[in-house]
Image 1 (cartoon, rainbow, N blue to C red):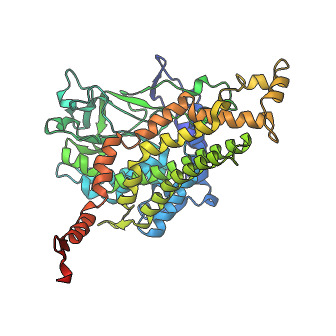
Image 2 (image 1 turned 30 degrees about the horizontal axis):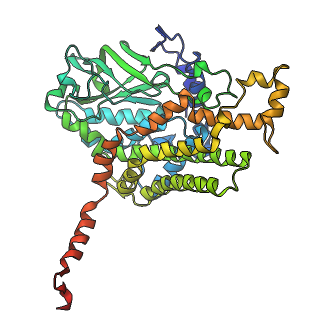
Length: 488
């Protein structure tokens, strides 16, 4: 199984990563990417060590693979898969939202259902199977770009004026498809091995040229990653920005300038129905979001610990009002933890034998994510108060002969050193106040799509109202204006 060093060495492959009006020479060494790339490398090292329990024997490749990419076919395998995902999430404390296990989980479900991709045109099902086996064999980090650019949200791509804005097919050769346009939001794309490109947004009958699904190496000719403003480059030290400095995974618009997609890398070719089925008929949407909720659980536990420690350092944890806030925080985090385990407990095997996490519990908690995360952050804000504002300007103030004595005397708490207090409140500020923290709040709000889509399309449809309405109708039918019918 490949190591972190081996992963880092692959990043200097000539990929076109654009930032601040220029092409990045070497992603692994650029200050916008080197620290988060190092974090990803640490994840691969964790998986490569058998002592960490993340390895398993894969029947698909007849050898050892990373369990975070496995197809769960029993309750025990599903549990072990969650624990492997959790192992990685605990290393980043949940702050790397699109670690390699995210898209890899989608491909596990795809790999369990190659028949969904079957076509009389070409062996797309075989392409999918072979690609999944590559992920297992090579321990690949695949990012994805599956959302159309926000050119217009009133219409779909076929209604947009001009040349391709959303990535779509503009030609076909013996070698493969020629695609042009763009797609968002490739989180981690600049430091991934490959990028998976498709569209999760529903398309209309006139959008057939945009109904595609394929994967390409990050260094493919004509493929560019136009990255958002990096936050890691503006950090003064790891002490001042403990999260930003380590976990600032870049988001990128992926641009395709007449890129050749070889036939063996095409999974769907201009097929709107299959485009939808790849996520929902394979169980990929449920399994992938179960991975996401595992990561979110770890992240919320981490934030809750920061809040609890702040209350202790401030000496407010005996105040009833503070205990009430900490209790509410505990209830919010526990609800996510419980739903995650409930989805595991209620998982059912599909026709292929893959266990799909219980959708009622899974989509239930996803429907509240846009409310849960902001409330957790608000509680942390309340408990931190002005403490996150009255801090030294930076770590230099703690070392300078001019300021160190004043910092040590006045920015402290009983039984807590100045350094420990400042460290804790710097961490809290990186969660609630920095650009990194703001980006994460927006990110969690829209992790699985717009909140109205998550609640209306996923939570509502998977709750199972029919059963309960039927029970209600039975109750209502049991009496009328003359009383209970059974008494007559």
